Length: 286
Image (cartoon, rainbow, N blue to C red):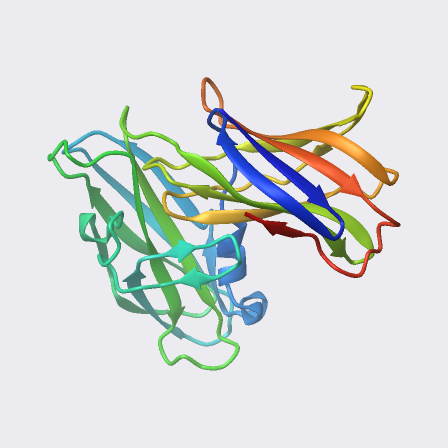
């Protein structure tokens, strides 16, 4: 499927049709942001990935551990608890009660301990067990987070979120939708900003880029986007630096490739006016 948009430096029209579907490798950078700025100074550190991704069949179980390290000279008290998690393209993050979201796996997970004291310069483990339900009505990707923080919630102690994803094998579909495309100025650069949501029930990890052609059909450039994971019901925003394009009109295709038949495309007509350091972002009107 393919969607079409016209984007200028000031005002543009947007029309939507449809295109294909998507791929992507990454652990969520949003979880790095979740670790507060003070986490860099934290005495308790989570070792290993902050995203754990598992492929399970109905009724299957999986057991694993989260390794912690106390880098302080004094004992540290830690508490562990669950939350659900959702993020939107506009940067909003939500942490509702565990099990409250439709695609939460919080009730599938048991963990211990919920509190602990870690001796100075020592390691400790949080053990968790995932039990995928036997009910085959469950399809696609489900997730929640284990939050790990100082039990006394002292300022500067830091907080970590470890996301646990369960993908039910051979179930679910990716369903990407482009919700916005604008051109604007950020830090003196002209950027194309695209918002994408996953309307499906399976996690999407697309590789993304935009191919740009002048009005004569000659290729004017290929611009690579950073990667990102898009969970069902969530969205991401991608800024692509197109400052190297001279002012003028271009036809472009934004591609989100998830591999196989899961490739989505958004046709964008760019009308670039003035220098990259434009004052106002583009506005798209439906």
